[in-house]
Length: 220
Ligand SMILES: *[C@@H]1O[C@H](CO)[C@@H](O)[C@H](O)[C@H]1NC(C)=O
Image (cartoon, rainbow, N blue to C red; front, side):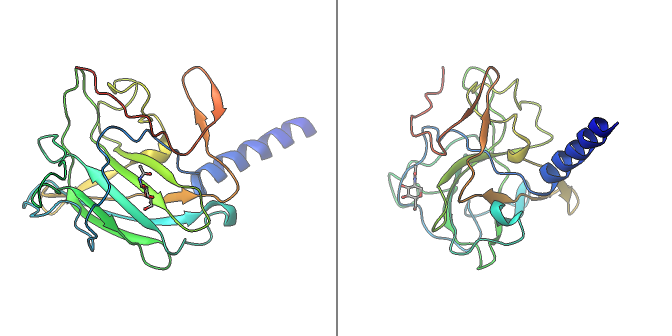
């Protein structure tokens, strides 16, 4: 009886904690990060069209205070593909589209206006995703990717086997508003000074590094 009660308590605790405050998992860097992205207020891709715009709000939160406080002085380095699934390469001044450094406010709040990222065919499909390199004084660096709930190419169909499109902490729910012209969604980023996220792979559970700097070579 007592054992059952303790188990139920544990279960409730686990479920509640997971819902309330879950560490954001890292994901691989991929081959497309380049240094020197322009600082922008909120638009990651320039010249946003009147359709397929994604407005993402979120907050960078501190895990050690059970997400009770936002983190200040955060730097978000963001890069993604355009609607055709193509990344800019930084080779000329016009070649920096869909890359931005964005600074959240002192409570960690951010708002990003961007394009709904295109899929690209790399011999299979990657789900639509946006890359983040999150740094904040005192916290380990987090390199990760954001995915979208409705995407049919999330893991196990993701063509990138090592990517983490199976992690709930990386999947945002977005909804269409404004006559189906705009997607809106919310995604919080949770960092810890003391705890590293548990990296769960299909075959093992390891405590890993936040940053995987090995380039992910797209398979042709
Ligand atoms: C991520 O951001 C940090 C802080 O700006 C920077 O030092 C680092 O080079 C960036 N990129 C990667 C891949 O770590």
